[in-house]
Length: 295
Image 1: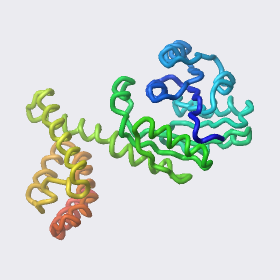
Image 2 (image 1 turned 90 degrees about the vertical axis):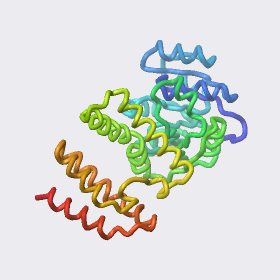
Image 3 (image 1 turned 90 degrees about the horizontal axis):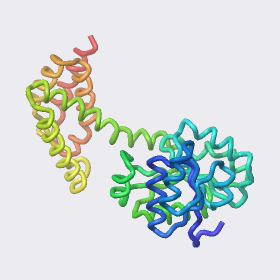
Image 4 (image 1 turned 120 degrees about the horizontal axis):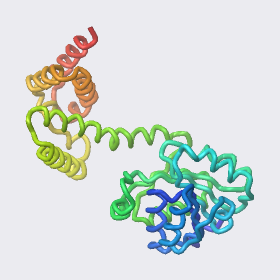
């Protein structure tokens, strides 16, 4: 497999991820040979945007590409692998963009001569236009046992202005869980905080403004200072009284939220210790509340 010339790319899937990557890669000098999708109209729309052929089957994608990017949803990946496994893939590369599934799901295609791997952008694809504007600088997790394919994927990420994270085999679920904690459940925490602010009389817009400013400042601190220096609040001050007040107030609203607050506080203690704060009283307090909650 050549590693210097840019491979012609085929897309299986024309949703948000596929559309974003295809358009950005064409802008970076790559050629998209063919696009297929469960919805023909989506394939035709994306093909028209990137100067590619909209095709109706996997064989046509393989015939018109060196590197096949499977950007379809996880729940149809098995059927796509089944469809590709009946084709001659000698000299081709097949890479999926699932965050949770590792490259092993493509192993049957190696028997047909394909080099296989995965490429996952650690970025929230809310819509195509937003993703196209924001993807530069994102980290891409790369799995590829073959050196030539790995070089192709690293060059592709570089062309997109991204950063490469090489994942060892079998570690994809843990990697994806880390992203879910940081991104998905930030939205959950935001929603809980929003509801609490509304419950004390804030208008929805006012609550959002307060939380958006707070989160923006937190992200700025993380970029500038990193962990643990970006952590602020009563834990970092050893302010036991405030934490007691928080737990009492939350317990009066929803014991589940109080339990979540308690667990997050416990998990934050190593960072607090790293800041040089004496955590003996904090640990004692949190242990007492945990014992009470378990009665």
